[in-house]
Length: 188
Image (tube, rainbow, N blue to C red; front, side, top):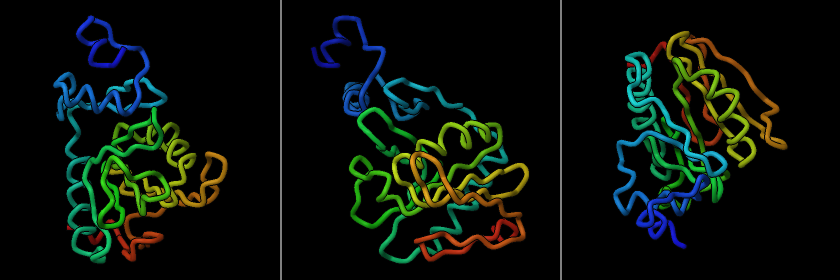
């Protein structure tokens, strides 16, 4: 039974694949405003309303990266990123090479992934960091919008980042492969 047939029959599987999520979206069951991620086949609801600090920091980072990225890279805001057939995450910001379609991009293709955290800090560090590491994301930042810090995760090995460092707002942070340096104090 296909996912669309299951919907018509009144049942949706407890576990979904990324392809089924896309099918459900195309069928109108999920809409773009639905805030969730798919982790190991399970729908994980995300906060619908984001705090002012979160949105302000995301806006500042978006502006800084959009201005500074080289022409061969693109910045995506809240893209759906497929890490595996049963893992679909939506980071706040992601950077990858021009020409890569969101549905086709995988962990090693991601030049930089950024999660902006206020109330989600623990989730971004304890749940998402190992998922990104497991799938080969080489440069993962968690920007604490409240404390004004950037925790940089690099060198993923066996589902864990082996190089994790925290930077204060006045310290420059260089993106590993994007050719961009950010200092939170300098963002407008």
